[in-house]
Image 1 (cartoon, rainbow, N blue to C red):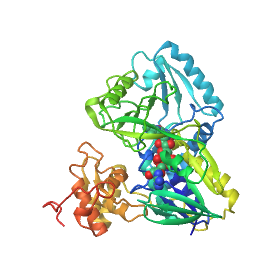
Image 2 (cartoon, helix red, strand yellow):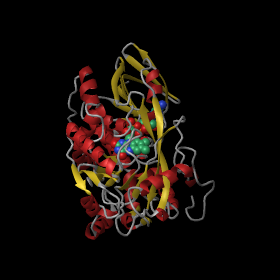
Image 3 (cartoon, helix red, strand yellow):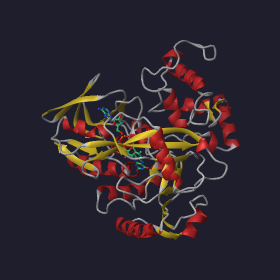
Image 4 (cartoon, rainbow, N blue to C red):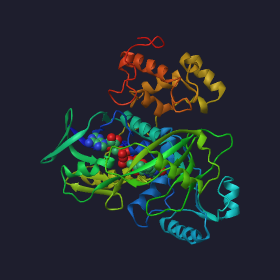
Length: 477
Ligand SMILES: Cc1cc2nc3c(=O)[nH]c(=O)nc-3n(C[C@H](O)[C@H](O)[C@H](O)COP(=O)(O)OP(=O)(O)OC[C@H]3O[C@@H](n4cnc5c(N)ncnc54)[C@H](O)[C@@H]3O)c2cc1C
């Protein structure tokens, strides 16, 4: 039996698991997917928002600002790519200028440093902004991050410190027996004294298995374009339009990896599993983005994708004990990524800490073993690595320059990939303009070798998505 069971290994569940691993507790995390961070946490704008925008006094406002401030240390400890590039919220009509001033007042109430800029200042910072720009609100603390890398490194560190993770485990029923919860998945049964529900868009369903219905979660879809690298920067900051009732609007931003994101749209849908994209919505994304930034090179689109926001009926994050020892961490829509370190601290200190004495884990190590990334390493250091392990000299992915050594290293850590997509999301092999055409067979062969399985048994993504029906002459068996 475990002390605490967390349902969901998105960024919320991963941060809570890592925070709990600072203490002497037995923690288990279950997720229905074949990898951590596989749902909303990997399909978003990847922005650590500054926090000027949420309603002052709301949980969103407080936890966003606290969470943003925690990111430098978290990313240093966990070797996660994070850049505070700042954001510009841009007015393109004169009548929008008072809205910028209101946002500046809101920022002051939320405790966020911002500056109002003239059109000339905006043009100097963003040469591609539309000529009609009237001014902007600059928030220097806004950053961009690799949210998937964040989830993996959080879980790796939590597991290094004793957390257990079980993937492909979909929770279908929870029953309470006095002081104990029985949590049934499609395959197994787990027992724990405390349950933390961090299951994203499914959090209303999971909550209702043990607690009265007090909220619902609507999936709100956002569709994006991803653009390839450009010769000269398209934008240097996160560029937002003015926010509306539908959210922060369609933005243009550099990503942590040097690509550009354009999106997201915003539409409530019925199906909590629908991650499709459609041309009409994406055309609207193009049109809206063109009102902010000139000459966006849509001929450089690498792909489109969609994510689902877990929009709560309460309009704020829901962090409550919904039944005895059953804690909902629900409705974590944007700015959930930015807020998640502070959400985890709140859950552990204000909820779990009131139930059990939190004894510091004497063996807690806050850092992960450093990662070696070809793109960020000097020639001399890389040669030293090759001298130790020749596989760092074998380039598996040419577009993103990823070596076999980097992939082998992933496989020898806690929270390793089990699929071609798992490797892609960790080291970007397959992310470039050939989209895996060159590297996928190599990655497939490495996975087969590592897990001692046939090449025909390696999945592209979730179980059953194998791409080879029979061995080919290139990779053999
Ligand atoms: C389009 C879009 C743009 C966004 N942009 C930003 C942004 O720029 N900045 C920001 O701060 N936030 C942003 N967000 C919000 C952010 O992505 C979320 O707040 C965050 O990812 C929520 O994480 P989570 O762990 O709560 O949910 P999820 O990542 O969805 O994780 C929930 C997990 O629970 C698992 N699960 C569900 N049901 C079960 C079950 N029955 N059994 C077992 N496991 C289950 C799922 O598989 C999933 O892994 C955006 C969201 C979207 C969709």
